[in-house]
Amino acid sequence: MIIAQWGAAGLAQAQTWPGWPGPPPPGYDPHAAAAEQHRQAIEQLRLQADQRQADAARQRLQTDRALRQLEAARSPAPTTPSATAYTPRPAPLPPPASLSPPVDQGAAGVPEIDAWLNRQPH
Image (tube, rainbow, N blue to C red; front, top):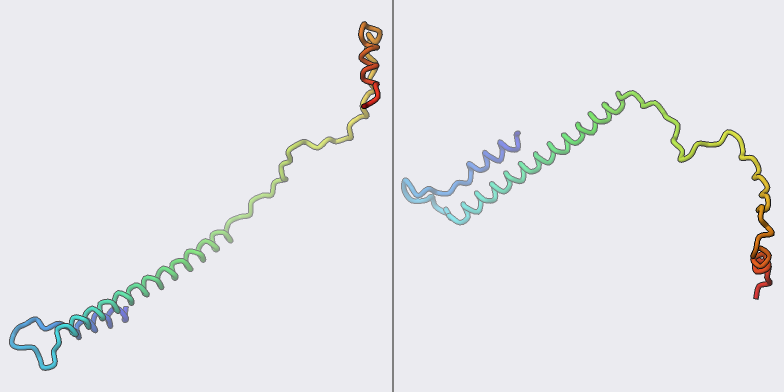
């Protein structure tokens, strides 16, 4: 606040001559006076930007602190066992049963197929 008041007070110091009543004071340069007014206005805008930036940083800190307090006050969630893609078997699988040969081994064409399957590779 003090900085903003200082900027407003500085603005009052550099004023352009309004043109009345009477002639301008000795050594008065209208271009220099306008440049000084602009410099002071820019300085005031910089001070306002710095103040807004400080306010934003303060609000970020307060928000972070409030979030940490809320998270600390939260009761912990109960732990659940991790889900698996399958249900584990309580016992190992039984050994595979032996395959019995087909009933019609003597059917027509079976000896030729067996001979072809048992041939020597090239």
